[in-house]
Length: 106
Image 1 (spheres, one colour):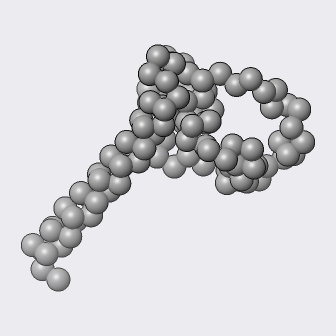
Image 2: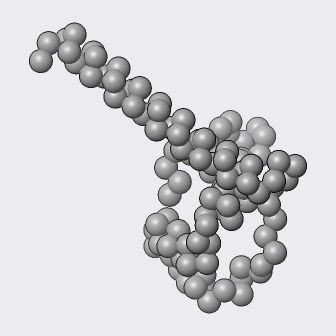
Image 3: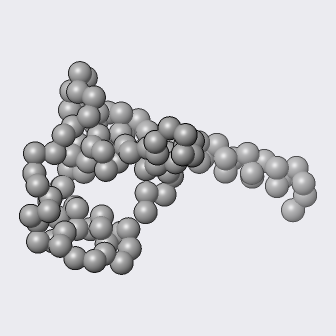
C-alpha cells in the first residue's frame, strides 16, 4: 500500500471517530434537554447504600454498570446528569481528569 492510500485511510478513520464522538455527545445532550433545560444536575432521591445488589465487591467497571442497569433502565435520563457521570477532579489537582473527560468510562 502506498503512502497516499495509507494517508487517506488514516484521514477517513479519524473522520469516522469524530463523527461517532459527535453523535454520542448529541445523544447525551438530547437526554439533558428531556430532563429539563433549567436543571443543572439531577439529584438522587434514593439511598443507594440500601440496595442489596450494590452491597458487594465489584471486580470490574462493567460489573458495576450491570448492577446499575438493573434499576436504571433509562440510563441516559437517569444517570448522565448525575455526579456519577459528570464528576471532575478538583481544581489544581490535574486538569481534565474525571469521568466527564474520559472516553472509556470503565
